Image (cartoon, rainbow, N blue to C red; front, side, top):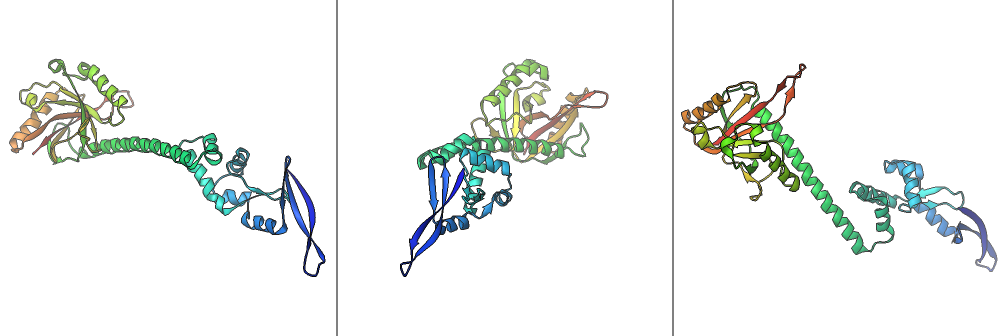
Length: 314
């Protein structure tokens, strides 16, 4: 950009001419003239150097230069010395650009907003990004809830011995399930692999469904008959039930127990839980939930995991 210095004469009181300096800012074939008053006004408005503006916005000179080159955040260029200056009012523009970038808009889209879109177009684009962010927020909240629930389960069994049932409060949670249609032959995880796959596929198609923590259930009636076959693949969540794909866990208390998969007496653990309910004159109001959280390996690569079991009671 070429800055050209020129002057014009103005008549003052008494009829004597008085010379005042005008500044001519040349951009290609376009010349912009500033009277000394206009120059002073521009200089007063655009008082922040590039370094000062970058510091206020917690950004870099390179970022500001890039935005300037794209025409989305334009400083005033002093025609006297060619220096760039920003206005404090442009801080909000910088953070609008930052917010839109964080919302997933490209710099080209932001340029369209600034230069081309009507008010209605801006509202439409911003509302679309708001919906996208709300979906992302929902997914993030689901992940947070899943981790919280996993930690709640671990905490509930802390300082408890494996195979020993105990009664405790249960947090409000919802359950999503997939029915096992051939339950008479579904005694192990390998037996229900295709139903686990079906359950996970449903979750992948519906962002309202969770995949962790997950497990399976055994009908309480089957526990009484010592017929330990799985009847559902399930996932648990701290998010409220929607009444369509997920439903609330019944009751506010449960009989809990956990089992080391390396132990061979899980049938005995089931029997202890049923005996505990009968002995304490409790009423089961749910199936038995069997939840696995994580598979662990020690230094010798030995495989270990626990089944966390509970039955809701009244």
